[in-house]
Amino acid sequence: MARPAARPHRSRTRRAAAAATLSTLVLGCTTALVDVPSASAIATRSRLAGADRFETAARIVERAFPTGAPVVYLARADAFPDALAAGALSDGPVLLVPRSGAVPAVVLESVQRLAPRTVVALGDANAVGDDVLAAVAGGRATRRLGGADRYATAALVARAAFPGTARTVYLTRGDTFPDALSAGSLTDGPVLLVPSTGEVPDVVLREVQRLAPQRVVALGDERAVAADVLDSAAAGRPTSRLGGADRYATSAAIARAAFPAGAPVTYLARADAFPDALAAGALRDGPVLLMPTCEEVPASGVEALRALDASHVVALGNGQAVCDRTLINAYYSVQPSTRYLGEQYFGGNVAGWWFNRQENVDGTLYDYATRAVWSGRTTESIPLDGGYARFRTTVETPGERPQDEHLPQLDVVVDGRVVSTTVLGVGAHRDLDVDVTGAQEVQLVLHAPEATGPYPVVGVTLLGNPRVVTATGVDDGPQYTHAVVPQQRLLLADSAGGGAMAGQLTAGRGVLGGVTYEHAVLGFYDEHAGFTGELTDRRSWRLSRAYRRLTTVVGMADDSEDPTAHGRLEVVLDGRLAHSVPFTVGRPVPVDVDITGVLDLELRTVNSAPGAATPVLADPVVTP
Image 1 (spheres, rainbow, N blue to C red):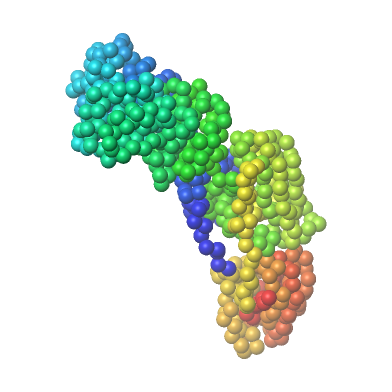
Image 2 (cartoon, one colour):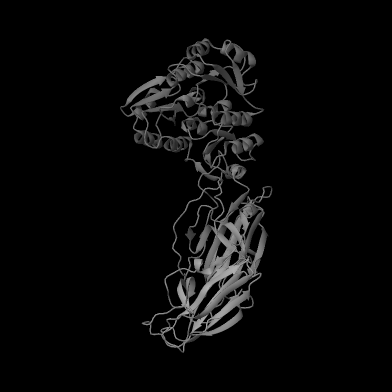
């Protein structure tokens, strides 16, 4: 049956996988609920951090410029004004340095890796001392972008970043940092510093005049940049504002303006300290959002994260800058409400667990099913980080064993406690809905039936769309569940496979009573196999309770060498022998069996002379 149309909002990584019988399984493997970036914003999270502000900046720079840069800019690590405008500089990153004294080794190592031609200090010698500039440069060319004050320095940075004109000029308050920290992602114009109220410095007015922008935009509300300051700097040009009720809302407005179509990554920076965000202006793949150190993500931040549709959330700095709680809350605000076991694998496997494949579970097609091959005890763990409320799946163990024989057991273990135990077999299924509110981990533990002989019991359990769902989200599992649409006439040979082997029915051409059947199902025959005694061949088909009748003609092939050969057709419905039809050479027998409501059909042929006769099922067909 045809697969349903591909689902556009979940990306797939197809991996070839060879089916094999497993006698042992690696236990306790862990599968993270992650995915590659896709339009559904299936989030992952990480951190760019070092032991201090110098190392954090170096880690950020390593991400932004992995192969080097022609220029490196140096900014004073304990004061913000001279570096606030540096986000507009696109030819190289900003590294933090002390004003004077020894330069941290991590800074020197970063410069060595970047191999710039020029090292540029931001600000005058009171911001970055000459000794520091020389030590970092290590003999490379040096220069400064520094003016008489912070306003003049920002104007020099703007001239370096935009030697010609710029479409936009952004204005930010010069005596505090929050509104400017997110501005590095604004690439259509430089940032100039202005006082929040009063006169606009001449150096700013001259730079706006030189840049000749089409518009002038204030960052922050009127408490940050007053309306008269904006109008004065614009000198009659169109104006607008990117601002909100607080620093978080302003940061969110800037991020959404910088990436109106969304971004693959969103960076989170501490709102009440500047060092970690100063270097982040070099990051061009996503905006910087300001966050509280260790609180809930502000509503404006949640809205921005969802609008940006990022697939990766990255905290800048260690846990004292942006704590794990804030990072996890941001992560959950952009992930989908439903996550599937093994979402990063499509048709791939980990230690016997085959993920994200379409499976027929108890007569229903599940697009994100998991097939677990068990022998002994096998475990799959799902880390949840406390962000989900329900674990749901439909579970079934297909096979030949009827319901009342030994069957595998599935335990759902939440944070080390067994909360659900399921024992199921052919012809039955169970829908699981387990409370995982606040749980850190769910484990799925499969116990194989106890072996009655020298070899372990090996089998398969199917899980239909195994998933976890958030408390407030919509479970989209039903969207990937489909009823089986029966064919009007299903030839069993079409899915029987070729390549004859002992113990297995195969598709082929057969002749009974002088009639040739092109879509026959044949028992095993090999005159050189040396078989003595009876041989039973079998094949199973999943009918999904969608068919009502099985019809065929069964007999020994006309060219059988042993005229006394005889056989028996056994029709097994959902694990139970329902019909037994004897046949002999030259006496084909018609078969018509009611299969209404049958999930699994198994046909077996018992052959008294496997080296001299071939059982033939003439074009067996099932119909609804």
